[in-house]
Image (cartoon, rainbow over all chains, first blue to last red; front, side, top):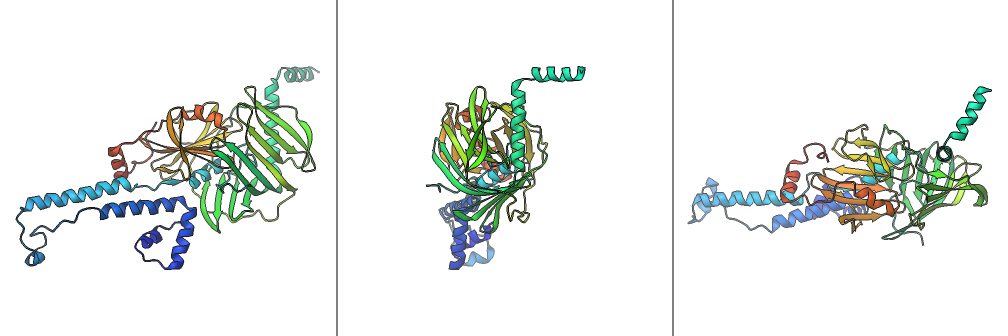
Length: 137
Length: 313
């Protein structure tokens, strides 16, 4: 699995089968990039869910007017409130969702390792080893 | 006769360090040409605790492959400017670089060597010294030329890392021809305002990929590191916060390498290398300091990106 972007979205929507969930969780345990993406999507979703619900202003959707109980506040107030809500959503999304994904340690290792292999001192002394944990007892 | 005298005079006048440095290069070159399979144990004593690993190595034609017997689904291939990490049969990350720049001025010298026996084989141990400090002990196999053991030291003489073969089988390994993996091309020869020297390290070359990801490679002739500048943030994995020279970083030690990650106003930065801990502060102090980008800059960056390459330093 190279990148699990769509699977992560489906996972958060509860649309994955158990086998797919297991596969995704295995991948997330080894891929910092996808794990970070999952975390970012969770933050954005919870931020959006925490916003207050606003009623539609009268006249915004003519077909719905018959069903809407007229409100006392004026139209300008509701237009302003809707614009403010949209601005808040954009601001939160912009702050918590990087436009470019974060760079995983493995990507840095791959670039450093590639360049180090051209180094005259390259060999067993300079081989870049991926993080395998503390495995020598 | 005149020529012979001139040659003799030149040899006498040649600084001893230059002669030894050439010998170190030759030893390392010969080691790169060796073909073998081996198991290597890596034990490092870092400020954040011990970092250890056992890996399987096979080298042929200058290309080195790594597999880990305790993590059989992990494989790394490295050599001639390429590095690929494979987990469970899938490529996790991969990079190619080209256009390596000049080699650094020789900084380290090696002594004349001591004959020893290692893994039951005739070997020679050399001590590598820089600025009067022993920085490494290198053990080479006499017959195959392979580097069997290397110990690196901190400035106070304590051991930083030891990489030693615990098994060694010279000769061409059976299956070193891995499938070529997809790679992230990087273009060399990029202009950069990253410092040309950091501590005793020289900047050798700079690379940039299509996403504006820049990295510069520094070496002191033996130890090396890369400095990364990226419009994105750097996920430091299991790193821990640390203060170096009153600056706050996230640091992560692996078996034989270290990573520092931090954020500046123009994006994420990181350093990855194999240099001993006593060299870290000197190097980091020459780089842009960690800085909170601020709410407005975060907003701007996340809405509109970095508009190309990271801002010049």
